[in-house]
Amino acid sequence: LLSRRIKNELKKQQLIFVADIKNFPFGNKSSSNLKKIVLDFINFIVSKGDVKVIVIACNTASTAAINDIRTVTNIPVISPISLILDSLKFNKFDKVSMIATSFTIKSNFYQTKIKQLIPQTSIVCLPTPDLAQMVEDSFTAQVRVDKQYIKSIAEKVNQSSVNALILGSTHYSAIRDEISIYIDDNIKIIDLGDLLIDKLKNMPLINQMQSRDKNKEELKIFLTKESEEFN
Image (cartoon, rainbow, N blue to C red; front, top):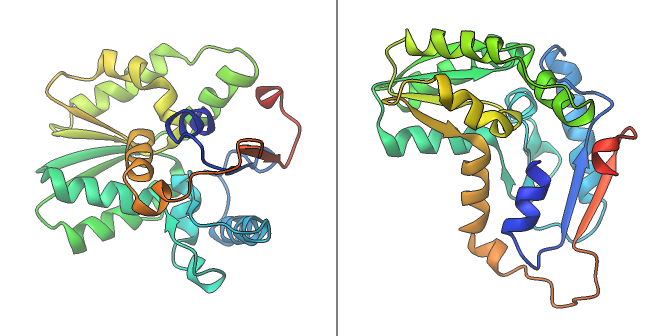
């Protein structure tokens, strides 16, 4: 879903998309395992040639490896972490909630960063360990995401007296409409997918990277495992 959105929004760009279907979901893996996965993929992408920007479109992977990425490349890296923190700084919320994988929540990364960088904002983190897999299954196996599960998450958010809800996984963008049905109207939904697209569209470097050769393939997809989703 995210790869399609990026392709549709960024016209005339040459894109490399790496989908790690073999290791998904990431939320139940160890920190050391995730770091290795991320760094291996960055090395793989860099090996493909003249790469100008790398996007880590996974909050869990970014949380695990963000401090180690600079050891393998000097290429600009866009991560969910910087996008979420920048959004919180700009909006100046008093209290926010984040739904994300168990790894992201248990890492205490966002809780610590927000306390350091945006002390006026408090955060309530709610682990949603099954949600990313549910969304993935809705694409690959045509299984509908459990509405009762979404409703139960929304009820916890509504009871937290927050100003905003951060969808802390790019997978959750696919069910934003379903989530919004149950979220109180006064709670702003911060969609990680939207933040990523807006960031890419407004980067001068991206705007300078338009492909001049119309015959060149504009999207190359690499999979770690075969998937009907990409057929």
